[in-house]
Amino acid sequence: MIPAETSIQRAAEHFHELGVPAIPVSEEGALLGVLEEDALIHAYERGLTSGDPIRELVKHTASVISARASGAEALRFLADNQVPYLLVVDSLQVPLGIATPSRLAAAPQIAYRPRMVGGMATPAGVYLTNGSIGAGVGPWALVATGVLMFLAFVVGGLLMRAVFNFGPEEWFTASWRFPVENAGASVFFLLALRFSPLAGIHGAEHKVVHAIERGEALEPDVVKRMPRLHPRCGTNIAVGAMLFLSIQGAGFGDPELRLLLAIVVTLTLWRPLGMLMQHVVTTKEPTTAQVESAIVSGKMLLKRVQTEAESQPNILRRLAASGLFQIMAGAILAQI
Image 1 (tube, one colour):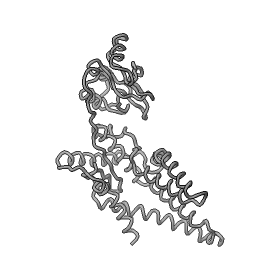
Image 2: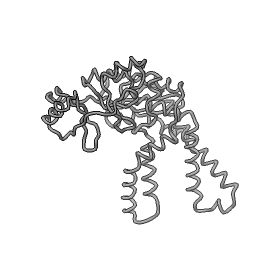
Image 3: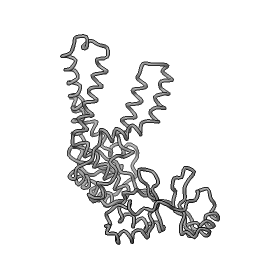
Image 4: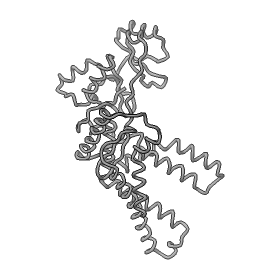
């Protein structure tokens, strides 16, 4: 299944690679319809270009069959309804693929999965990695990001402390002073992040990662229409950690029940709340310059992957390549 924002050029490549008469198309994770190969001819007749999205070409109806059906049932359905293909779905109506007479008789093929791409946004630009090879800005840009993020939090704390110092004396000695100071520092940090260029660079990083993982061309018009949010963003992990620690560290109830509640709530909400936090705070729509800068990092990564020997990275190698250690080093340096 391919997203509706896929370019006509990339869709044509999918048809060439897969050898199917139609491909399921999704919109925001839900099935939108199917793209038939013949639609590509009509696209050019309508004046569309190879870089335009396929959304306008999608057919919203298709002959559907359950994945539980036998090959004989599928062939009988094809013959009885005089259709060239069937959209195969699971019990939740999620598309699994396209069935044609030749594919029903042929041996199943193992689908190719491209390597995942991760990255970091820094004030100097985007850092990208496939887990063993990195590209884009250098390590000092990541270190500088850690310094700036820590300083933003410190400034927020100082501002909150000033509020307490100039407030009534009972505020200064109140038991709730430190939790409120920390909460205020966090709010200031998030606002500083949202209104800084870093949020736009972060959005550009996500768009380039989506384009690479989907096999799209790294061209501004294509990259700009990629999603701004990414399910593997570190924001999701940070939100999950905050949820768990906040519930586990609260003073109510039995400690064992509180631990269980923390685990259940975190596993249930870490990704939805993380995606919401990405949308509201940690990313924003990037400028053209930010997208073009991220594309440079993306092309650099692809070039390095194609020309350099690549080993299978273990977990320590992945962590080292992620840029996380450099950012942590920057935060530590800022405290010295």
